[in-house]
Image 1 (tube, helix red, strand yellow):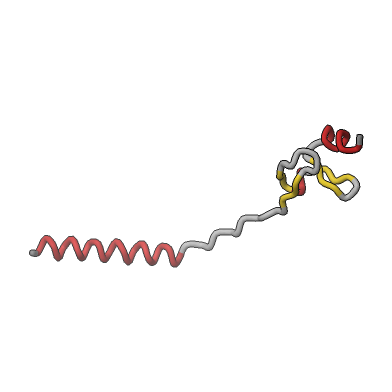
Image 2 (cartoon, helix red, strand yellow):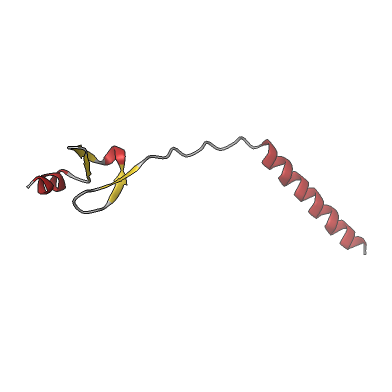
Length: 70
């Protein structure tokens, strides 16, 4: 019976330690999100900063931009 009480006491102490650690931990920064756009030629989605903008349309590479113009 005393071993059971000892195990319960240890479990409570560990729980309280973990709870206090999580409360004192610094908040994590929110990840920066970026708009995704779709290539007009092939339909692949890519971040807006990596796309090529031509004529108000987004392309994944210069080859698709040229192929769309033809």
